[in-house]
Length: 316
Image (cartoon, rainbow, N blue to C red; front, side, top):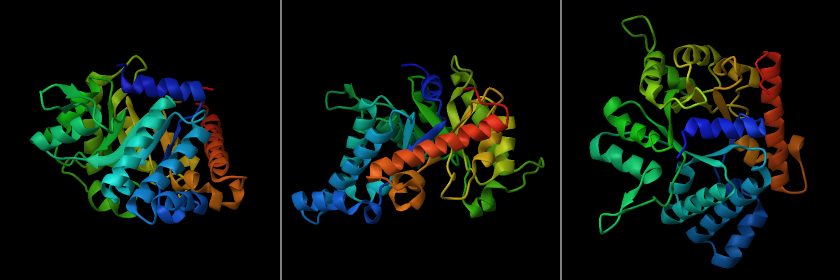
């Protein structure tokens, strides 16, 4: 399988859109029609939740896949419902792949030894059957987010998946205000902790650089800290930044420009609530929730592209 960064950048260039949609369903915010249909078939049960989640996600993907290169799924919203939630997650991943778009699983997994290996196998590798043969896992993502707190021991199994066309996004600087409690701690050399992690991203990713010039080892950088974002880009030039925090969390298009290189590449910007629940926003009102989501997704693309043009680095 081709290098993950190459596959992602090819889709970004084809669609002229460095953004992704976060499919993070919350049952209270899903349109009543979707919930009513699920309850009519399965009652007020956990099974109806799974059916509602999948129907909601499917319609969103079908409405946006021609403009969106990748979808990010935060696993927490699914695992809360146990096996039924994982069923919705599995069906959603399969549908995205049928639409030939990339799946980024936002799980922020991290551990050491056999546990780290099991996490990597579960979502980026293969699982062992009774006769010791291998099969793809039920939820096979193209890339996933990883917590680096354990150091190289906890990262190594995920890096090995990069040899087989998968990707990882290592958490470096998150968008929440209290992230500074740890991530901005001053080290003995005068740098801050997040900078040390960014240096490791550059080091670990050097062997996974594809023909695009970008590595399959990327970094998670929140849109709400533009100064830190700029510093991370200086440190890890070849790492693609997965950027949460745009829109609903306060991040603006101009805030994320430092994460792009002079070639207009280097970042993929995520929006979740601002897209999937856009039917609640008067700016994007349309005849259906999926049409509203499409309007919001187009507005996001236009906002980012305009900021890139203003910065003189837009490639389209």
